[in-house]
Length: 246
Image 1 (tube, rainbow, N blue to C red):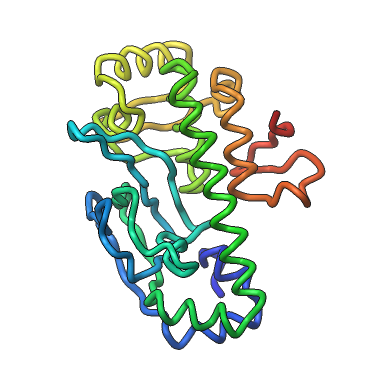
Image 2: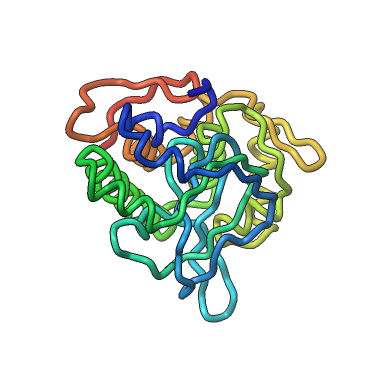
């Protein structure tokens, strides 16, 4: 596999041969909706680059992000363990290149291979922990703390310090008014933590952003990249070394 290969697939070792014949390459464009709440999920996407945002949608149309998935995960993985009805709106946040597979083919591979089966179970359990912690964070922490956490998480997922989205997207992901986000971004830029351009934002001081973010950043990233039972110390994520989550 290439250096940019999906990490979930890479973790399967030789057992990836059970699903390789069923994989097909695809490109997802910004704003493309994979499915809406209530839809039947019949395809699993393994990103090699880009990001997919999982949004909780309220009755009045308000959206808020509950998870962000890049090449360290699998979009729609729960459909392969029997949960085939979508509960989130899954939208391509930034142009993504991915391999995809029909749910039935992945289910069959999991029945044959214990390694594939456990990889799916573990990943879905980790993502559930992520979503639960993220929900608590949205309820308890300030806009600045959450925005710093989201910026850091997004650059970790993309594996670069530049995020090519508008300020409207930041507000949408956090479920807050654009005016609140704009004021916070101006403050972070004035403090030298970020640089803002037209349709893009660059992290100028990631370590300082970690100090301004809530502790959920460390906890959420650890849940995403390392199994908690095997993690014993600081782990570098996109060039940053983080302390153990609380």
